[in-house]
Image 1 (cartoon, helix red, strand yellow):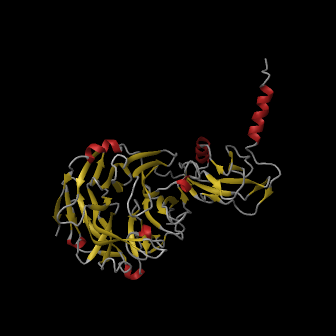
Image 2 (cartoon, rainbow, N blue to C red):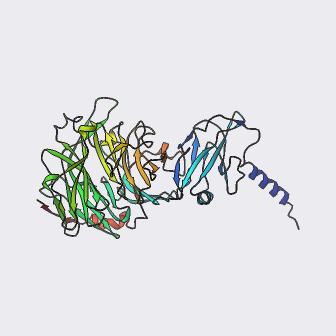
Length: 493
């Protein structure tokens, strides 16, 4: 027997389905839609979360078709409706990306203005078969400089919208945690620093955590900026005496400067800080160390020492390198310059070599090394085979680009940028092809397209990792509460 409500049910199903398709009687618009985030013509990995977005115009209603054609006639196309915001069903999105890996999908946007529908020119989203490392680890912190309140280190699954806490200062009130780093994107080899009421460096390997006391009499500070040796047996640190001063000009806020800094290498198994006279010269400043993928070269930034704060805009860092022998823990006998501040007239920070050893990305600003407060800071790429370097366009903007991290396959770069509002750093991802060219970057997708407007915290030090971190903050508390493991200093002549 046919249920008496069956015809009404069928009618409602037809009505519901038809309202998700293209509206009838629309007019054509000449340009592409103004959307946020700007996902027009971007290159994405096959395993990224849905690119949810909103209209930057003021329509009451939206309809979007995502697929192989603008009318939704292709198999598997997604039809979504919303009021100013579009949230794409994750399951349908994943299946669409898998079917179109190595190709492109078309996104067609319809907006309703004054009771009339308009169709904008479709745009493409290009899908790479190369998956990206599924997690990004970052710190969330207010974009201030006097003090901090809430902060923490978190891991985001970028194939979905899941975010988990690694550690935050609700466990350690009033404490700072920063400078997290991983060995070759490995979530099981991690470290970060604690500063404030509790100090020390947390070293995590294979799920086990230990606290290190990296300050010794021979160095000016605890370890500051870290970088793992690919063997997992060493970690390079800078040791820095840092100060900050404030500008009276409205277009500049703050300068963060080193009055002293050196580079040392921590021998994990023997708990030694290894130093070279070439990396601790009193007349120069050394900082931001990074090992090459084969572990035999240590790159770093170096500048002639100046008077702080008087010479704040005269201190400019070059990119340098020194040999390192991991079998003996010894350094080379000379320093070579890769990018000279005398040649550029500017200053290098945050060198990062791609895991395949072909390219090095660094930040270039007018002076100093704390580029996050420099609006002019851009990313540059150095071809290690030729020695040539150039701006890493098109990923730069008119505002700050600063910290950056490679994916494990050297195909993707995540970097922090203030291009949205000049104040909050946000994570952008860009594809890097075989010819050394970047694609247009895209903002890390969020479930709610309004997320970044209402977030009061910046994304700091984004790092790709290949999996989920197994050790959480509560498991670390016992190590954090310990007296810590002391290290000894050894000068390698």
